[in-house]
Length: 220
Image (cartoon, rainbow, N blue to C red; front, side, top):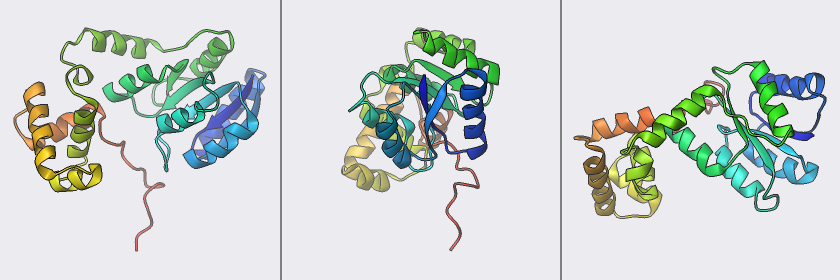
């Protein structure tokens, strides 16, 4: 296969390249360390497989995938991430990708197995992912089953944490509308305070993952 790798950590990108080329015999036709770079590299190299880190410094990885699919709707994709939670699970399911690897728990052997499976026309999701998907599917009050997309967005911003006025400004809503969304969220999830809502948002992964020291803007 011709493979493109989108991964912002240079060392891990080199490891991915080595697994793909030296161990599995594929060719790496493009590499990118950011979402914007990926949107240039992928159309110019036409890979068979996209190995995509979903937490990039400049863009959301799923947004990168959505934009790539405008021109290459059937591109096979292996998602990798350092963070796995309920929200990531839901987004992976909705994205319809061919595999997932958790950088925090999976091994290089499993990465190789995932790429080999996709090359063979199969999918690859490790046992912890499959178990999490099973438990999530059996939970009738999972957040994605009881909240609208707008409510999930508002809840994530509550967990950032942002005030109602800040959320309203960001989403182009009135503060009163945001407050109404927030109370509907609390009612549906059985939450009793803004602080409890923020903790729920962080626990489910509705907020952005922590920013590493490498990705923080320099001090003024």
